[in-house]
Image (cartoon, rainbow, N blue to C red; front, side, top):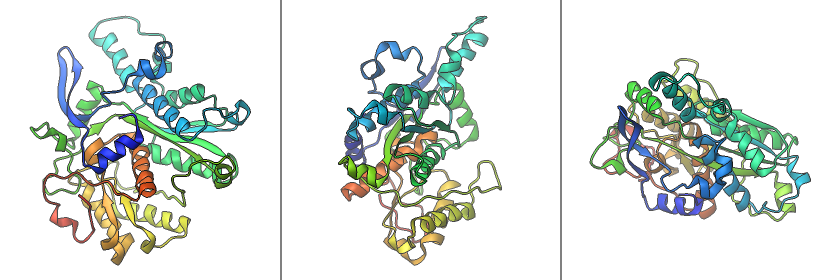
Length: 365
């Protein structure tokens, strides 16, 4: 959906946006469980003229950023103030659909030329640039591409600028639409994707005993971040406060997660926020529903939370909106923000029992 409130309410009811989607065309077609933005009308949202220079990831990103901007009460914000506001955006695949279409034109259709707009459509920083253009923002405009951490890093770096006094207001988040045929086949080759099933809406089962892999999705989420004094001065509605952040590198393997790396990042968050494990009430888990990833995350949370783990509510909303790759951090931060604001925890939408190996960590379903 295009409304954070309606989407959050659906998640709280355990409603899944996952369905079987047919990816590709002609001889190159595959079916996968996929969370698609099927109700999104880019023409109605952005206008037909603008779309000629926008890959789908830019369309979704610009729509999400403008939604956040309007929700923040900034529609009439003066141009002079906009010159100081920036955009920090995350994406893992960038304009992947444009790139695949170009390759198909060259290698399958035998064309000698492709669209002259292919570069500006496909470049990773296109989405952030379109947001700055649409909202008239003249501050820093940066793109972060760090796989599944892309939009989480973008938000973190935006917060750093505000904390350092380099900016008063930033638009941050992420978008992803990296699901052309070739990309889907690449993920299938990794053997981490859940298969198509009769109960496809429940294909993603984070922390479940019967989990069979992740489900990919597309979408975008944007947030307006600003200093507390700036928000109060303009009478802004404040959903939540960012107290701290942390990051780490496992430095052991390109794709296999490590408990120690996650523990370092989580402990850094608590130190930066000047909190203890006992202060934590809810964790929106990465929870991809892969056999390898989920146990590592549970072990990391157990180490950091210790005896308090039993009291912490933990859920993975990926069970309903899928894995948005570079946009995962942004949409899950949106879910967490609304959970804090409304004091309601969205569940993990499980159809079966939890994996008994989860030990004592409390997982909400």
